[in-house]
Image (cartoon, rainbow, N blue to C red):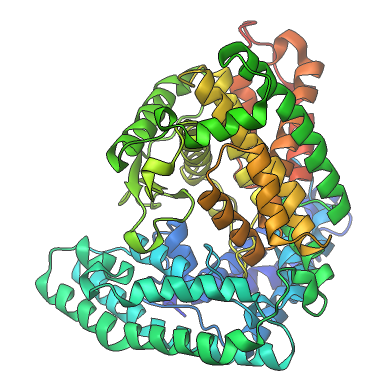
Length: 603
C-alpha cells in the first residue's frame, strides 16, 4: 500500500468513527443529515483509495494520475476473499446511511453510486469469474494488460522504474491465473471451449512477435531511454513470454479437454443466477432474460421499418436484407485500404468536434486521436481509451483495420461518433475534468469479470449515434443506414445474448440472426458473437441504456415543452459521471421540475 493511500484510509476510518457516534446531533435532523453525508464521503474516500490499491492497473487504464503504476493486482483467491469481507462491511454501512442523505445532495449521489457499485460486485460473485477468467475480449488479461501497457506512464526515471516493477509482476499474475483455473475445473466452473480456442489463437499470435513488437513493450516505444528499452525487452523475453507459453500450454493440454462444451454460462453451476446478476450489474436494473429477448425483437422491428424507408428513398428497393448484403459485399461500398478507413473515421470525428458547441454547454478540453489496433488484435472491435487525468495522454480511439477491403463504408461513421464525439470521449472527459467531483464519479470502476455500468456508459454512446443524426453529422443516406445498422446490431444483442446464455440458442443461430439484420461482415459478426459468449450480459447494456436515456429525454421534453434546452439536458446527464439508470431518471425529473426559463431557443 502506498503511503498516501494508507494515510487516506486511516484518516477516513477515524473520521467515520467520530461521525457515526453523532452525540451532538440526535435532535437536529439537518445536523444528522450533514453527519451522514460526511460519513458517506469518508466511506467513498476509503473505498476509492482501497480500490486503487487493489486494482492498480485498472486505475492506470482509467487515467488516475496518482495510481500505484508500479504494481499489478494480487489475483490469488485468498486475497480476493479478504477484499470481499471489506466490500460487505462498506455495503452495510452505506445502506444504513443512504436514507439519511437527500438524493439531490452530492453526498446522496455518491451514496447511491457507491451502493450500486458494491451491490453489483456482491451479486456477480455468483458467477465465480475468478475461476474461469479465460476470455478473448477486454475482460481477458492478455487484452486488458495490453491496454495497461499503452496507458503506462513513462518519461522520467521514477516512471520508468515503476513500469519495470509492474511488468516484472505480470508473470506472477499469469501463473496465478493457472492456479485459479485449476480450482475452477475442480469445482466444475469453466469457460466455453470455443472461447478457449480463441484465446489460444491470440496467445499464438503474441508468441511469434519479436520483443520489440509485443504490446507489453509499448512503454519503451514511448520513451527514448536506451537502458529502459533494454531492461523492458529483457523482462518481455525472460519473464512475460515464458509465462504466456506456460499459460498457453496449460490451456491446450489441461484446460481445453475439461472446458464446457456449451456456450451458455447457464451450463456452469449457478449459471442462470450468474447471468441475471451480470445483467443487473451491467444495466443497473433488474430484467429477466426473456424480457431482454422480447425487447430486442420489438426494437429490431422498429429499426427494420426505418431501414426500409431509407432503402426505398435512396436505393430504390424495399428488400432490406438484400440491400444489407449488397452493402457488405459490393466493392463500391467497401474500403480499399487501411488509410482510407482511418481517414473516413477521422473526417467524421472532425465534423463532430466542430458541431459540439451547439449541442453541449460543457465542452471537453482533452483531445481524442485515432490509432489502429496493434497487429495481434487487429480483428478486435473498435475501442475507446480515456485520456490521463494529468493531461499526459489524449483519449485514444483504437480502430480495427483488419481486412479493410472486406469492411463496408456503411457503419464506420456511426462507430466513430459512438467512440469519440458525441459518445464516449465527450462523456468520459466531461466527468474526468470536473475537478470538484469525487473520483468514484469521475472515473467509475471496473469490477472483476469486466463488470461496470454499461447502461450509462455504452447506453450514452449508443444514444449519441442517433444524436449524431440530429446534429447533421452523417455524410449520406448510406451512412445513415449504417447508423441504423449499428442500432440493429445492439438490438440484436438483446436477442442473441440471453438467447445463447439462457434460452438455448446455438452460436450459429446467433450468427445467422445478426447477418440477417445488420450490415456487418460475416467475420465481424462471428467475432462479436464469440465476444458475447466470453462476456455474458455485457452486450445488453448498450441498447437497454440508450432506450432509457431516450425515454428520460422524451419525458423531459414533454414536461418542459418550449422551455426544454438540449444543451442543458445533455449537461445534466453527463456532469456527474456514471450514474445508475434509476438515479439518472430521478435527477432529470428533479431538473425538469425546477428548470429555469430559457431564451426559447431550445436547441
